[in-house]
Image (cartoon, rainbow, N blue to C red):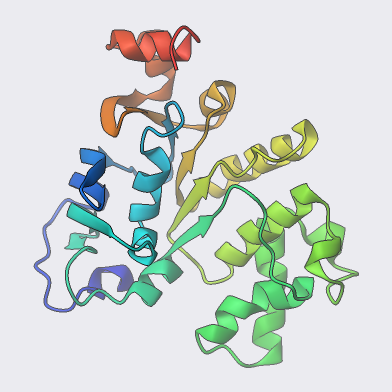
Length: 265
């Protein structure tokens, strides 16, 4: 059982639940933004969350590594199973959880530090001190994010000097630096130009070989290009989930068909 499965002290493990939600609801006060959603996230796949603005998909995404805990008045019910353990259980070490479930936001948010120190920040926080070890992590993370060749001669430069697309890949490298098992992406290319978007999409396809990836996107073409599975949300409810190729060609629900074809939402 992996380290992620030991996060909730005393929790009862259930076999066969590798990474999935079960009847998950999220409330802001009395408002139910996400309504009883059960979704699996198979290994080495990309799952796209689609739906109109305000449908709950970003709230759902943030619940997967308990980022909603940081929002006043937010409350979560239901289960999020990882390796048979419910990470919503009392006693979960949220810091270790977020080490294993990385997140990248819509707009690039590099720290006001050098390129090197952006990547080294997480490993240092988790106890890595040796320069050789940090150098190896920085290089490996930047290579995995397809950024090393572009920045290897300017690691001491400010991360803010990078282009928008480079900054977003830097943020992905920063998430990768602590060796996560799962990567959450909240519209990671929505603020980027087409060339940078293409690089992010290629990176996602490569990372799928080693990670589970969950991505929120408003771009139907993007979802079709990069995801293996797609979940369509509407008003906090999961309307349809399935293989992306089927959902985009022969969806089971009329609402899904209308949204994908642009007639709704």
